[in-house]
Image (cartoon, rainbow, N blue to C red):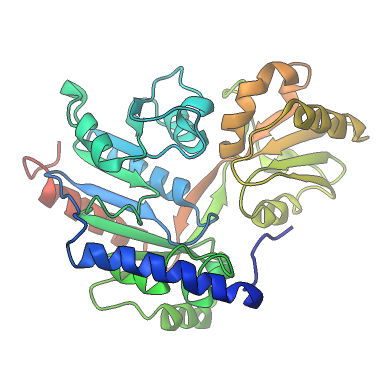
Length: 364
């Protein structure tokens, strides 16, 4: 099911009320009545102004991969839906309840970088700068475009191909958390989740709709899928091409829009059962029983439960419930890929910014 929402015109009066509050808050920052802090190291913000589904975490991971071998990289998130409060530094034993599913996903994938959570980003940065020899050279702010108490050195705004900012309106009628004019604060705009066969006219249409300012760079990305990874044994991997038409797949998702995964897996199997939960869903014991029952009902000789990296971070909290079928549960990882051969240009912008704003101005 595609969860892309249409604009609900009946709710537009509520959107106008909500929008007036958001507009006033932004103006208080613009007029410097509310203060933004700058920090003396590279701070890159990756975020959006719509509700979910733009691919913030994969793009954050792309930046981590780009920078981690030359710099001490720290990722700071608020840790959405975690059960803890305040600043918390992730370690190898941290779980999704403590730090949130997306920070857990990043920490599992990049064990040697610093991952921290704090709803107060200024406080979080101050704490990171007190971490001694692991003091970060760069801080990546995950999902902080609207957290204006921090003034990042570089702002990256994501908007999804299937519902770009200019086609949407404010909550609750639409999905925007602030007016589309907020795009003006971005240094880089990325249209995410593009079809990999976009035509030149599609690129031109999206460019004209977003109409970036001269100081802004516009990029287009898509997702590519990696090999399946077993949820309990990361050394156990399976290529998607090993799945046959006769095999059964229980696709387990708690994300904004599972349609791209359905489309991808449909290229391999004719027997896909979607179990679709709300974004960041915390699985209950009844959910776990229903997942196992759905899997057991599949009659194919070979059958799998396939889930996302983000959902796996939460499922691992209940791995004992799946111990009899854990060998059949796989994670489908995704990676960002730039279209139009824009990857090198994007990398250069990031690397130049970091190098010019590092403490010693050089590559470590």
